[in-house]
Image 1 (tube, one colour):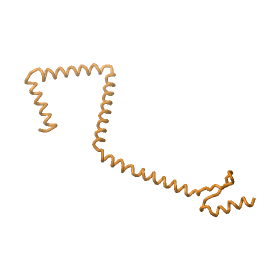
Image 2: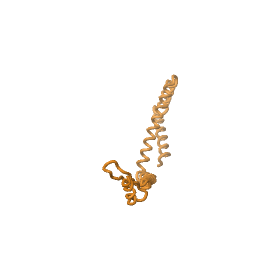
Image 3: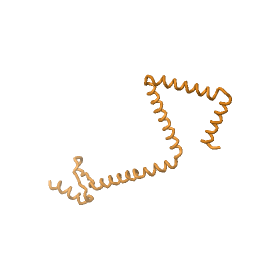
Image 4: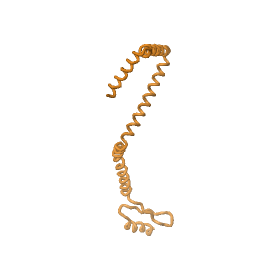
Length: 144
């Protein structure tokens, strides 16, 4: 028994500092365990690399935004228009589900269309008046 106890002690002198030698059941070989500090440093290195990558994400996002500014803005505008139209259509559908509002809005639309036709489209002089109003609105919005 003394030889078995002396063998790990003699090997422990050759092991790195903090390493533990454990006897293995197979062929009487001794397994070596590394000290816990080496695994901690490995975890610390991995954590540092992950933190570096996560720290660079805002720079990557900013450079991507600077490079593709116009397509990003255009895509956001198109998506916002689509969402706005969907909400507007849902609102109109909800209003149409109210029993008396749908026929009232139809009567208002028909009466306004009839008034517009008789006011601006029947006579030639009123058509010219409509064209001048449209041109003045164009000039106000777009300039000369």
